[in-house]
Image (cartoon, rainbow, N blue to C red):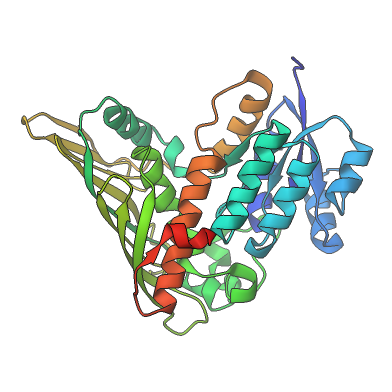
Length: 357
């Protein structure tokens, strides 16, 4: 197998220029190609990082570089289906930023297309790479908690100014290396789909599905509040899973500047419980037989570069796809779409199966 791989980044917005592009440029095993249909954004990123291989479409880039093996899609939410399909149609492995798509049907279509092309979809989730989350996953996979019966996910984050269309308010905290999100990227439902659920709950929900592998939402009831924006800022879901377990999933984007918030999943099983927080790195497991395991809070940092690194390892080394689109991506989209449909009906329960009708 080749010692290097050529990878494209589709979308040169704030997250690509903050995480993916620097991570790939720092990887000696990567040749980087940039793609963005917006020439201004494309040229700004290309100039900032001195990348000369820059194109305005996937077909143009593939024609110029037939040896492309993979692409990272980090575009506005409404374009995930289109960009993902273009990448997969060309037989490239795909790292898809979250949420995978805005609809379950769209996510399922990408999963099926990837299977037909013999390529993989890796989701761009970050928190599960952290050592405490990996430890929690190992404990659960070993069966220490037994059958999962109840889960609570809680996430709080500094995002409300995004939903107000004022991303510049976070410039001093985020330190955008090229530019921040566009004013409408997260504030306009036509572009973003929704707010806190699509931008943030997608993280905690995916972490829940990763830790409790095999679980899948069957029915969702949700309430959402927009506060002074056009999209949801505060959310509360009640979920029934395919094994009969129940879950609560909640979040708010209205915390102060510089507040790291929480990304916590607490799982209760027939043999014990486990709580882990991706922000503090704290883990506590207490089993019914009295056994306890702890990892003290230690601020593990944000692993923003790891998805890109693991994507390279997956392509070049055959490393396992830990967060596949077929499960982590699709199951999370199902939960979110059902929640948005429920909230639009004042909390009426929505069956996930109905999303495919």
